[in-house]
Length: 170
Image 1 (spheres, helix red, strand yellow):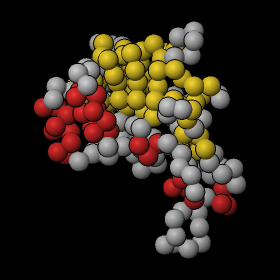
Image 2 (cartoon, helix red, strand yellow; image 1 turned 120 degrees about the horizontal axis):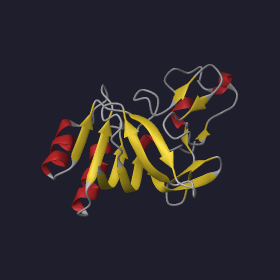
Image 3 (cartoon, helix red, strand yellow; image 1 turned 180 degrees about the horizontal axis):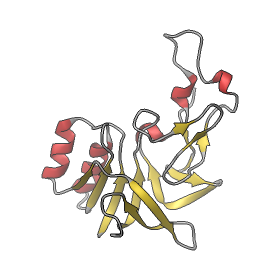
Image 4 (cartoon, one colour; image 1 turned 180 degrees about the vertical axis):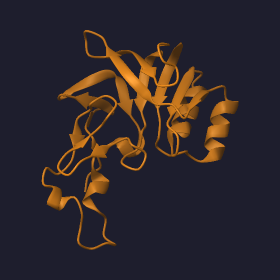
């Protein structure tokens, strides 16, 4: 299946991103894992605008070209049916939606293996003041202008980031 844009969602604003591309007359597929759903009205508008929604699905495999760009990807529900696009958007959110994962001393992005900005000292991930902004809230993937996702320090040429997945400055 071919689209102009494929959005890997999970961020509450993923459907808004998809609607933006539909307004630009692009064919758009939004892959949205279960559990975290953006504003219902945004998803409804996206569908009414002709967007394709793969609800309760996840990317299971990514195939890269020789230049490091994404050639195609596969999802759990579609199995061996490839999804291809000119442009891909990572709008998977952070920890709650599964866009970022962590163990006791490392943080990673699980779909593309994107570079992640986080403090290497786990003791600094949280503030003692419960009501203060928590340092882990600023963790996210590293990007190069204009929001191209970095992997091993190099941009993935056809993958941009949108929303909370992007590292924020403190």
